[in-house]
Length: 252
Image 1 (cartoon, helix red, strand yellow):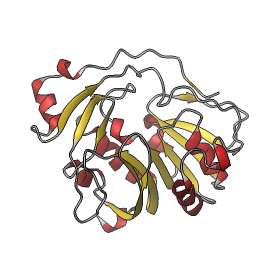
Image 2: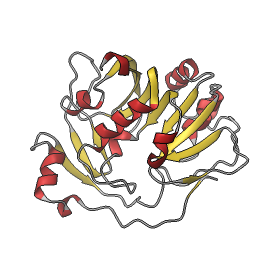
Image 3: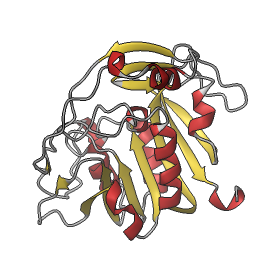
């Protein structure tokens, strides 16, 4: 089992506790809808503890699809084979990590706000925090499933920051090789459809659960990334999965 190293972080603030100035930054001067769905997950990793004690790529879901869907597994099979992969934000059961190993990734590294203890017998999966990122080699591919929409909301012990999601995506660009790929899933706001030239949808924050991206904030999130393709991920939220290419060398 992966566990969070023992530490205690005070409960994340409710939206009403923030200064009026910070509230305005989150709402982008009332352009982003603010609603409420409050969590106290500051002392756990996203998804809680990890029910895994081996790096075996044994499938977790029926038919070996890890409950990720056929298209998701096809994307992983195409982009992570024989690559060094960064998984940004993990999930209960280490689903993405094991799916990457199933797709024959060379190695998988988890990036989290809180440190994770990985058992010694897990050889192909390791964990780092944002404090470690200046001392690592760049990755070929990154996977982020339902992570960046949480950044800056404090739910997982991260710093309150109205632009935490955008800053985190910018940090990721520096961790990937030029022309490296990001497989990204985030929720879209009401009416959101992923047309690259005419993106529609309402921007929303469900404090402090997550953001939902619309026509204002989505272009900000993926600035400097090239959309390769996308597809719909069926589920509770209006979510799509994108494959993005890191265009570092084309934006300098």
